[in-house]
Amino acid sequence: MGNSVLIQIAKTHLLTRKKQSAIASLGVTFGIGTFIVLVSFMTGLNGLLDGLILNRTPHIRIYNEVQPSKKQPIELHPAFGGKVHMVHSVKPKQDQASIYNNQPLMSTLKKNPLVMGITPQVSARIFYQSGSVLLNGNAIGINALEEDRLFNFKQYIVNGLPKDLANNENGIVLGIGVAKKLSINVGDRVQLLSSTGATYRLKVVGFFQSGLADIDKVQSYVNVKMAQRIAGEGNNFVTDISVKLFDIEQAKGLSDQIAATYGVNSIDIKAANAQFETGTTIRNIITYAVSITLLIVAGFGIYNILNMVIYEKMNDIAILKATGFSGNDVKRIFIYQAMFIGIVGGLLGLAMGGALSFLISKAPFETEAIPTVKTFPVNFQPLFYVIGAIFAIVTTFFAGYLPARKASKIDPVEIIRGQ
Image (tube, rainbow, N blue to C red; front, side, top):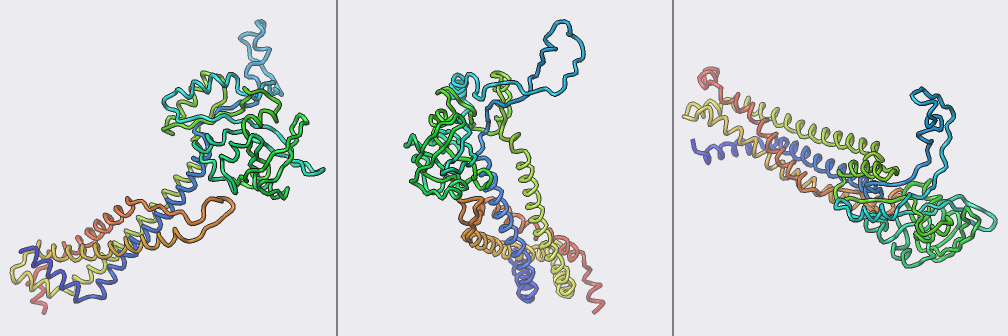
C-alpha cells in the first residue's frame, strides 16, 4: 500500500486520540528538554571549573624544591661500598631557591616547537606593614602582559588591568583579602618589609581575587624586577618558570624530559591537578547517565501508550487487514504514529530545552570564589541538540516498533469472530 495512504491513516489514529497523543508527545518533550538543560548546564559548569584550573595553571611548572640529599656521605666512602646503609633523620640539603642556569633553560624552551610561551616568576617573602602591625605575605614577581596572554591573568584582577602593573615599576596588585585588612584602595601606597629588613612603598594598581580566601589574604603580584629587589637578589634570580604548550597532552613527556635533562623539579598540569580531573570525569558520567535515563523513560511512556492504542484499535486493524492491508502495512502505520510523536515531541523538547538554558544563562550568579562570573555557566553546544534530536527519533522508533510488530501479527478472523 502507498505511503501516503498509510501516513493518512496514522494521522487519523493520532487525531482521534488527541489526549493520548499529546501525553506521549509531552513525554518526549520533557525528556528531551530536561536532557538539553541538564547536559548544557552541567557541561557548562564543568567547563567553567576546568577553565579556572587550565587558565591559571601552567601546563608545566619548573621549580626548585628543598629535599633531603639523595646520596649521603657514607655512600660515597669507598670503605662502605656495596653495603646496606641505615641513615636516620636525614636533613634537607642547603640549596639555592633560584633555578640553576635558568636563562639558557628559558631560551631553549622558547625555541621548542611544542611551547606556546613561557613566563618566569620570582617568589619573595614579605610583611605588609600598617603602622606597627605586620601581616605575613608573599609577593610574586611576574611579567604581567605575558601572564595575561598565557594564563588570563586579567580575569582575576578587580579594579585594574595587567598593563597597569606592567607600566608601573613600583606597582603592586594586592590580594583582595590583604586590601580589606589594610583598608587600602586602588591608588594608595602600601608599605612592604622584606625578609632582609628593607622597606618598599608600592602603589596599588589593582586587586587580585583568586577565589581562595587563604591565598587572597597573603599573596600579591609585583613586577619581576621588583620581586628580585625585595628578595635581595640579582636579575638572574628566578624561582619558577611557567610553560604553556600548544597541546596539553604533550605536557607529561616534556616535563619528564626537562627534569631529566636539567636536573630541576618539573610537574605537568595533569599530575598537579589529578584529583580535580577525577572529579570532572565523575560529574560527566553522572550527567550523561541521568540524561540518557530521562530519554529511556520517555521511550517507555511512548511504548505503553502505543500498546494501549493497539488494544483499542483491534477492530480497525482487523478491518484494515480484511480490506487488503498486509501485516507490514499495519506495522508501518503504527511506526509512523510513533515517529510523528517523536518528531513533534522532539522539536518541542529542543525548543523548551534551548529556552530554559537561555533563561538559566541570564540568571545572576555572583560569588566571591569566582569574581569574573556574573551569570550561571551554560554550554550552548550544537552537538547536544543533535544528540537530543537523534535520541528522540531512535527512542520513539523502537518504542513504536515492538507494538507495531504485535499489531502486524493480529489475525483479523479471530477479531471479527469475537465480535
